[in-house]
Image 1 (spheres, rainbow, N blue to C red):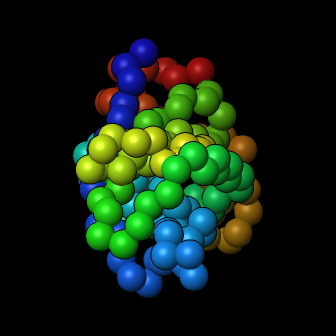
Image 2: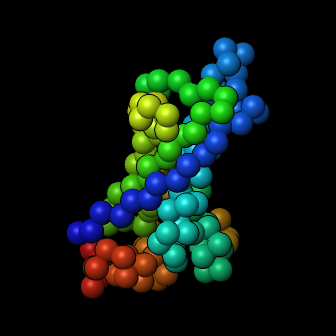
Length: 144
């Protein structure tokens, strides 16, 4: 199976800095979001606008972050986002956030999103658009 990944760059803004003049821990969640949005542009059909057109939403169900080194104002965060295949009706991603200036790994983590319909009900089967996306980008004829 193909490995799907994307890399995007995010300039650290003043509004993301805490009292210790480092990126506040919650800002890394936004960097993960930036990574997912960039991933969706690179692999069309799985972005938030694509989901909404299909009447599907994918809220975060689970998130993990491990902080390894700080980022500071004017640093550039390089966000590596990797799609993690799971046969269920869910989206899983892994992330690594690096400091561009020296390549230091600053954070790593993962997210799981579950599919829900416009009625707010959890979908237990993969939506058709997601099956088509998996066939196109993962080369799966009929994903398990």
